[in-house]
Each structure stands twice: as structure tokens, then as C-alpha cells.
Length: 192
Image (cartoon, rainbow, N blue to C red; front, side, top):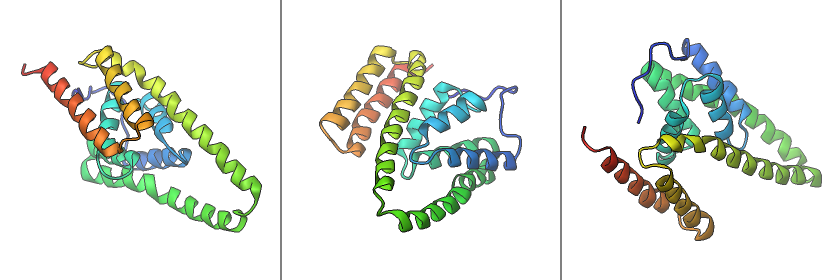
């Protein structure tokens, strides 16, 4: 559960810092930014703990739209309200959009080259490795989860089986297993 922010906790110094931080984050994360977001926000800037990152990433995943965009809106809003959310969103989109448009022009010119196709296939393997490495890094956050490690691992295993092996639709898996996890956690925490 997210607790109030301590006064001495690192946080963005200004809207400019927020914009530049999310621009830098977005420029590092072509093809999937989960690993980059976790490293930048949790390990380098320490704007979030691992536990907060896991919780807020889960919320960002079930909201419509790209996960990291949702997360940037939540973080920007947390520190500066609506202006912060809008600045973080602009940081995630403005400069990367210009870079993507430039790359699209270059790709259109060289897409027929076999070396270009091979390079793109190679990047897919790296992206899968980044996602797996980030999952392993975040595993320690489950040790502090109210449900305990065995239940968390069972829910994670069920999600893996449902999506990777049974090929069930992601939305249904999120709805059923995510809803179950929320209900179990709510029941475990109970009224205090």
C-alpha cells in the first residue's frame, strides 16, 4: 500500500526537471520502457520505492493506453497536480515523436535491405530479455506484499499459464486474476 511521502524523499525539483526526466526516460526506451522506467524512477532518481513501482505499474497496466504514459501521468500528478501530469506526458511524447518520425523516414528508404530486417529481429530478443530482467528485479517487492510470497507466486504463475500457454485474452486475465488479487488483498488487510 502506498503511504504518505516522507519529507526528505527525492522528488522532481520543478516542472522542467519533470519534463527533462521523462524525455530522457522516453528516449532510452525504444521498443519497451519497463526496464528503463524501473531503473530511472526507482534506482537512480528514487522518486518511487520498488513496492510503489509494482503497485502503480499494476494500476497503469489496467488503465487504457500505454502503460508508461499512464505511469507518467500518475507521477506528474502526484508531485505537481494537473500541470505536472501534462508536463510529464509532454516529456514522454514530444521529443520521442520527432525521433520516431525521422526514423520512419529512414526506414521507408532502407526497409528492403536484409540487414535491416535481421537487425530488427535481433532487437526482439533483446526486448524479451529486458522484460524478463526487470521482472526478476521487481520480484523482491513481493516479499513485502500482504498476501505473502506463495500466494503472489501462485497468482503470477496462473497469469503466465493463462497468457503464455493457454493464450487467453489479456483483458480477461487481468479482470479475473487482477480482481481476485485485489479482493484477496483487501480481505487480508481488512478494516483497521
